[in-house]
Amino acid sequence: MFFSFLSCSSVPQKEVPVDYRSLIINADDLCQDRRTTDAILKCYNEGIVTSTTAFVNFPDSIELLKEVHEQYPDFPIGIHLNMTFGKPVLPPEEIPTMVNKNGDFWNEDQILTHIADIDYEEVKKEIRAQIELFLSSGVPLDHLDYHNHILALYTPFHQIVREIAVEKNLPIRNPVPVSSYRKIKVSSGGGDSAAISKLIVYGMLHPFKSIPMMKKVGVDAFIEQERKTKEYGIKTPDWFIDVFYENADSETFLSIIDQLPNGVSEIMCHPGSSENEIKILTDPEIKSKIEEKGIVLTDFSKF
Image (cartoon, rainbow, N blue to C red):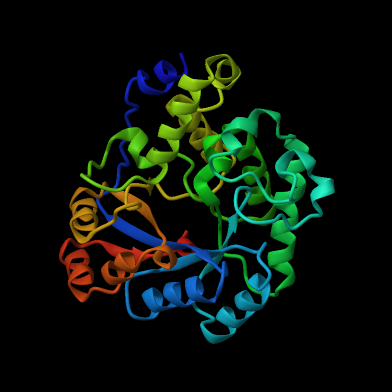
């Protein structure tokens, strides 16, 4: 049943009535650790990364955040809101439905089993605590996005993101993966299409548990979050390119560039997790191809 809900919806149609193509290349996972942070900085200094988003819930996150901003004050840094990796900012006893017995967040696989039981108010408390911790660093907050895209894939939680975006006047990552529109086809990569696949598998294995989730996940639910984002007056890119992830290679990236739709697109990348991504994102030929296509590299601050 859950499989049918996700896979048999008609492909939504969307066109952006402009004749330009702009591209944000955002590196996720800044401040996870020194190695990841250095990889992202390399792709910013020597390559085509235009913005980044930082974790705040790891032991050295805030010191790394301050250090990066001090060294590169023009590098736009947003927050990578997180509820699936590491320990929370709040004491685990304050958000018991979000953590396992060790006080760690449910990971990206475990959370599918628990997500329907996670308390909405606990999520709101933890996400707001992460925002306030970022702001306490004194580093300007550029925009909001979400680790594993969970705060958008499980659509009830996206309301929390929208409320904060309105309060802080911040742009956000588009909640709808471009794979939902089937606008860009690649032979490799995964991104949030992979996350959606995990939801499908979960639905097949646990059909009765998945029935209450039917209206909360899937293409129609994602589209509704995008509609509400615009209704709230929140700035967001026209497209979120999720397919340059997992087995990323130059062929995939160039194929994405060739198919890039009109409007402002965001490609998420993870140079801290892949040496191959570092090579692609710092390859002068890749940058030349982008320029040849008339695509303008930009960032969220241009909204």
